[in-house]
Amino acid sequence: MSERLEIPPVSMLLGSSWNNYFKILKDQDISPEYKNKVRLTTLIVMINTPFHWWEKAVYNQKKLESTTFKKPPVFILGHWRSGTTLLHNMLCKDPRASYVTTYQTVYPNNLASKLIFRSFMKVAMPDRRPADNMKLNVSYPQEDEFALSNMYHNNYYNFYYFPNNYKEYYNKSVRFEGLTHEEREEWKKNYEILLKKAYLNVKGERQIIKNPVNTARIRVLLEMYPDARFLFIYRNPITVFLSTQKFFRAILQSLMLHKVDNDFIDQMILEVYQMLMDDYLEYKALIPEGNLYELRYESFEKDPVEYLRIIYDELIRDDFNIVEDSFVKYFESTKGHIKQKYEVDKSVIDLVQNNWGKYMELFNYEVPKEIIIKQ
Image 1 (tube, helix red, strand yellow):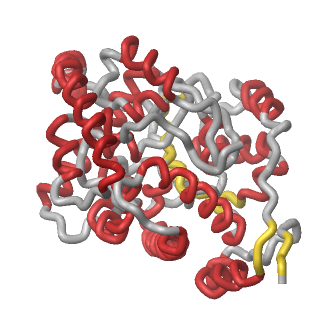
Image 2 (tube, rainbow, N blue to C red; image 1 turned 90 degrees about the horizontal axis):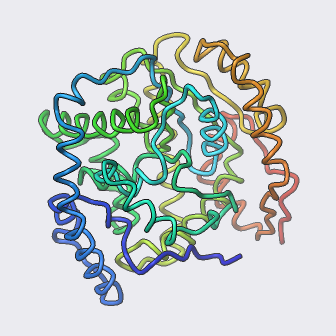
Image 3 (spheres, rainbow, N blue to C red; image 1 turned 60 degrees about the vertical axis):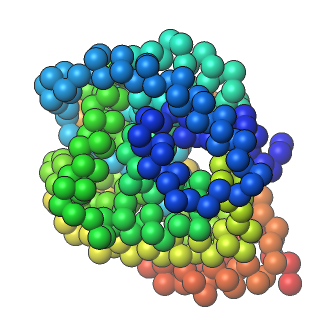
């Protein structure tokens, strides 16, 4: 399997609205080798624009304002490569679940015309994710940050296109630093539109929302949904670093519009993990008692169905017996999945321990025994 995610020579911004697209690209330094990608993406955004007018007619203001969630949403939190995808996929096997689909992630402004654009996406999308070989499908549950990026320019995932700006994107779109009250409210408005459209699209009773970036957005999410439930999953930081490193090195090569090297990517991973965990630890106390459940990935992996039962009883507070068979079937279907094995230099382990040692101590982790360390 290729270490690089191969996608067509267009940007993920192809599903963006016209105005949003140019706000993201404004004043950015695009490397010469990506100029043609931007030109082709611009053409596709222009072609898509008339369908966006139809979208606004179908998902009009009156329809969105009258849409309310029947049950409190569940936000899955945790750093990338911590098990958020497995947890999200399992919870979305509940027929009462609603979620952002992979299609909506790319085309959040084209739900009304999805019969047209979904066909193109099926042809262009790889069958599996490059970092972990998990299956991909346009209808599968997906995290929502890319979707929000195609709706509103103040978004953290713009770092995939312009990684040099990751700190600025984090401070503005995760911590909301330097934003006016109006800009902050505009972000909330766009996020709510995204989630309501997902709710109407899938037609489930409860939103199951996975987004690693939301790990640090607890305060603003509680402003929007005071009774929301939060499910935080964490994993051995050394495994998280190695897996995130592999994933980002693969996907950034296909998405970025200016060049960065692997050393830059590694430093970015180290810093963002620290920021994300520190923000989570600072703000998790704001969550009302009983509305947060913290889950250790290694425990969940051994007995996922039993932990889902606990999550339903203690956090979601809904009938687990209705969906137990669906969860068991999904878990059985994933048993053939081959986990990544790592053989790394001792200097890499030292790097992680020196930067993330306090989190390893906090979450009670040591160096995983299955990792082969070269001296």
